[in-house]
Image (cartoon, rainbow over all chains, first blue to last red; front, side, top):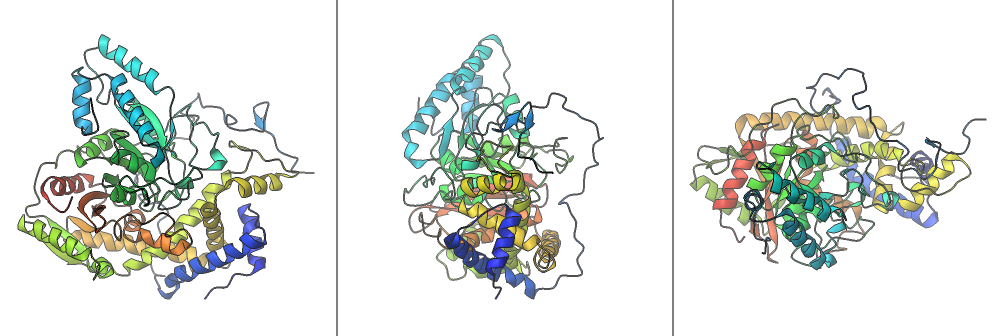
Length: 94
Length: 478
């Protein structure tokens, strides 16, 4: 059975943009182990010869790379950090 | 007038013949929503609904011909965009989010004359099967306050069952239209992947998400599906195949049809109180000239783990956009990373966090091949199997759920037991085929049970026909 360490949870929460206190971290470990245990059934089966398609239905041609809707609504409409029609965030580069 | 017993088709006739106005209809449903407020099916009634209804009535007084849904009130699930109106995904994270444009499905309904009167409750970001994951409280079952309405489109299904609107839109990624429809005794169709545009629907697992209709009867469902289906240049996974007339096979029979019943499924319900109900239905179909054929879908049970690898993997990527700067909320932070963490940690619910973590786990290096690649291959394997199955039959029959709606809080402590609820529904999502849930009998608590009919890719017409036949002719304990 798959065991998840505190270190792994820390790594995963960094990847996920989430933070957990000790208690919720313990609960998350227990939940994830339980789920992975159930998902591990997959490991017992081998379908390595199958080719995977990325889309359900490869029916459509791609459209031309030209804007179709020139009156697009503002992207910052729902932002609470909007400044001069841009998203405003702390500096990310030095 | 009490419109609650009227079908959509009857309401359309009343409006088109000017016997009933849109204002009368909207008022009637708004009052019903108020009356059943404690069910918590509707999160918000849009305050412009009456005003729009008045405009519809002005239009009908000046024009002879009216569009098909002229003045008809509808409800939409809270993850479907209706321009200028809130769309919160039942999440604190999006509590103040206003849809910047119309989803294609809503646009098509508006073009057909419909009046959107409100948005319905759901599991947060459609992740769940009971609406217990809504940040705004659980939706109770239409017939029993102690039981769940199902999910994630629990609000829409409960609303239709209680006649809070003649029809409602829902979305289905792993059973989210069919399971609540089954729990509330209404008709819910998950279309073929690519049949209805996903544009303007908040993505959960993009390769599995579908948008469909919840209605009181099969005919109404088919009618709305004909309006919302079709190619959309804004969704490149939508299909260019011509949309057939979904009413064509209604009012027909099942003479000569072959129904596949997967051995693996019947084994799961073997010995349960419901087994005999399905046997009784199969006998009825046989008497009516249909052939019930045992088919095999090898390793069927593995569809659950496959789903719970693929859906969280896609969800974790889709959820990355909720960073605390672009949408609705804004917890401060000293760095961009801390803003992301602060907002997501504070405003996302437990199940959503669990799926993001799980998704990132199965996609992370060292585990990608063991989980994600394997699940992708198995999905392909299931698709091959279903195509083979349809060489032998016209449609597949199976339950929609294990049984009647379960109790509120019965499964909240154990995520795996909640996931297992999806046993019968995720197959259609993983293989992309259409499936309809139609009430056919009742369980020991006198609550509805839904039969599930699965069809070939893009063959909604056939499953509508079969569902309509059962709805009109089969006398279970409905």
